[in-house]
Image (cartoon, rainbow, N blue to C red; front, side, top):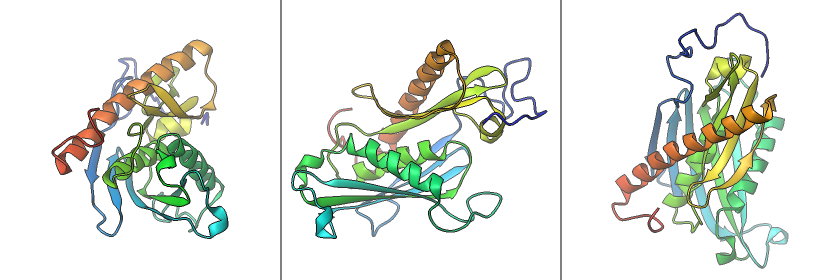
Length: 245
């Protein structure tokens, strides 16, 4: 964030580089149950992001010393494919992937009713096959759908969206150039039913008023994506999944 650029991120009419207004999100497409060997899965496109999420379990946690006698452990693995970015990424986990894996694991443990599955593990694999700005939000949103597809009991289906600041304006769902050359990025994870924020990170600088505005926009974006999550699940499961949302 914050790299100087001569690119005009927002024009005098308030339009962004891709033609969106300040409160518009990029196009989102969600498909459920795309990987037949997983217990639950999701494919999600969000702008230029293309993401697969696969859930395995609950199953016995191995090695056994990792088991918790009172609850399941949730292990999320976020990975960007080597070909997912313009400059080929070195294969395997890096510092950023490990950090995102950790915060997504902690967010999902807040959602899953882990007490139902003592001594078990639930594995959530998130693979970014094409990356643009907001891949961690896309990954968490895809993971929420995959968990629901696997029938994992949760207090709500987690969703995520980011807001930030670019061109001096607070905007929703930053695109690539806005993420690279903007002033701030604020991704959040959210539970629409309870209003609980389960993930919040910030890169860059915002005033308190700008932070409140960005947070409101991000929550609004989460609610929009949540409707698309539920629609994708209802297309596969005509009856309500996990009860009324």
